[in-house]
Image (cartoon, rainbow over all chains, first blue to last red; front, side, top):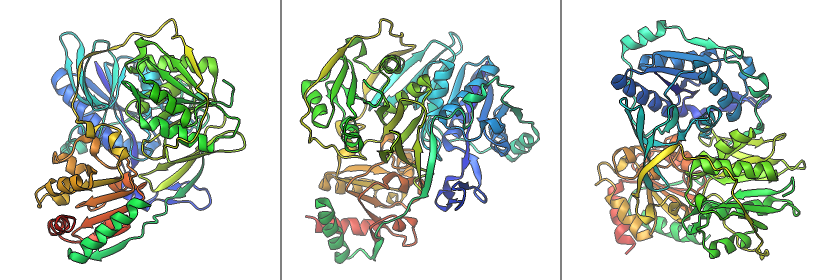
Length: 266
Length: 328
């Protein structure tokens, strides 16, 4: 059986503070900003691979994005995914979470046979965390967000899952396959692929699917299929006072205490 | 409801409605047009009257109440089904959720079912002349502010991060409650909940932290000065909550729901005190809403000093010990 992992390629978050807007088009200038796999998605890959080790699943990474997303999918293969599929084409450009979820779910429907979908809970660039749940809705499968453990039982094809939800630890049993779960960046520590694995992965073909391959309605993809619209973007202005004092003497303590008193009243 | 009406999903916890719900109502009443009516959607029969009265003081016009004990316990499949059915019949213009554990999974599911737009954890909003809500959200770790609208589809869905907007109880609206009967079909739970137990103390509750005036947060720099002991002592003295960076979580000094920043929570207290954290982008974005920020770190070139109002370059252990004496 297959495990599907949803992967998003994002600009490296270490460079977020260096992002600039094109003064004319108001779009993001991505040149010179390295692209990486979203950190929580790496944890999703790691979980899928650990399930594969114990239960002979086949792991398929699925992403939507421009051609350059292949780099991240090759990394996913180097980490241990068996296959990677890129959904790409101009019809998909400018998609919001709804249109993205629709396209991803159409690809999953095409893959047809799968036990579970694993995704990162949130991508660091947009930070909405909406896509996995919406994919689950389009596929009409049960979804559990932010899990902190998952054990699969081959004997009866069930899974025990736990998560902390509203300060309560919940233990759940999923008896109906397939299902979808999300994991946070704190779920596990993804391993670094070996040089050998990277070389092997670089030679592997990434399957690309266009809009016809996944039998998608073009009115539900890309900008056309996106109910939300960005009307303007501005760079955040740092307006902190930045008064810095040096030394741990009595004066520093006094300034600290005085400021706390003053700022609490405002 | 009319096509300009605003609907707020009320998130309850046992007998109470959580503060984040009142924050949404207060904010939307501030920005709405005078004739727009605000309805509150409440599922389940457990909530006390006092919490219901507070809805009207914050500006609600009507409470739409599925007073059904089958809906007392939150369940994603059931709640999304009931809400979607309500929307199909009543067609509000706006539907608002809290960006809590519940709202963050419920809102996207409802949006996908209605095939409409959803904007996540906004930091500001206003109506334009076409009754579109212009929704400001931070992107790329707070470095960009993006204005989003949902021009053609209704309702427009939005989630609000707790702690961003103030609760204002200055309305004296009449208590108008409409009891609704649940749809004849309510989906079965597809996931079997075997057991659940409360793991956190009351002061670590999900929403408790957003009520604090001061929040203290520590980072990896606490490693060589007794871990979080000094921070915990200071927090006790100032009656504040303790949070931290992701490395602080990795060390086991704080629980996961206390990680500040991109992989955790956003907070906006009056004063945010960061101790022993260098100030990586994915961390500083988590307190960009704080009114004032104080940073203490021994490395004067640390980026944290770019994100504070008051910075103290000092040996942390020495400073905190002196502070403990000075505050007596």
